Length: 405
Image (cartoon, rainbow, N blue to C red; front, side, top):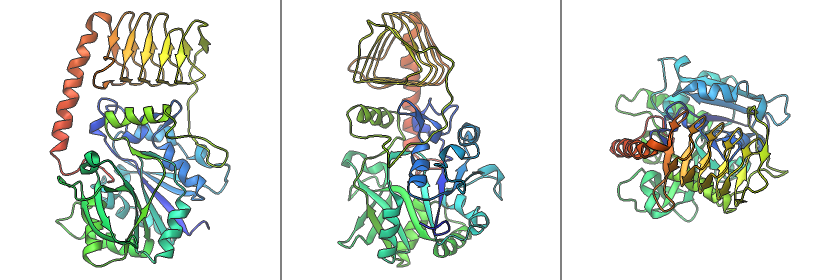
């Protein structure tokens, strides 16, 4: 792929209300994943591994949490000195802030024009998958497409959360509905769009003048393309992909990882990140029982870990047990603690004797830097009720802030 044939614009401004309280201090794409990474590492690594080395990262909500991680992009360059990965904060854009996904690209038209790309790849910053975008580009060119949307079949029970489409035998999109209340198909948009830049630029300028538009790809731009008769094709993706926009889906994706449904790394598809090494002396107690777990090498573990992921900097005391849980960076777990089916945010402190979650219960979640005592660990149920209330409010909205689906 030549340098100017395709560039990527990575939408990473999502607030992630359905991931609260994990997103109280972090943008959704900055949430840790998989023991070493953050969610945004997946599309960034995909780009570099696909030969796309010009990448704009568009930020907005809690932008500093991503800016500190991405920095100047050198950690994702893959050794390519010509790689150009740059941040595009919403507050720096003309008109102060991005009002939708299409608006975010529109407000950076001049920056894109500097690179004069033939094609522009629009990506979501909050999905877990590994994709070779070159194959999608080949499909796009071969079909003479104005716009190509990557699609994946999803469980019917989840279809209402996505942009849903129907396509004919040649993969030409016939209809598209953003987050339908009663889906007629389970073919979901992955929030990955590929356009001829000259075509997209014209459509964005038209959309920007439409006062009734929400300036969103899923709600406005794609439906208008279909209405106007543009050549829109669906690119079927067969690999692992998961939207981790809810607490439950984030937990399930980690369980998929433990079950071997997704595999990271590999000589031909390395994962890149900017991981800050924790200040800790690594230790494993000889009597600690560890099974079906992913544990960062820089951890101190004296208790039992089963079907769980422990990130770097985690300290776990004797007599403690962690099962079916995700323990994010720099969490301190005291002695005789019991943790079941729980996601614990960065920097939390769990005091001796606390019990969190239930072996057969719903997923419990703690935000960053929370302190849990044994005598008041029952307070976590109130936290979960707050989260459920936020989810109910969010479900009533037509779309969520900076959503890319």
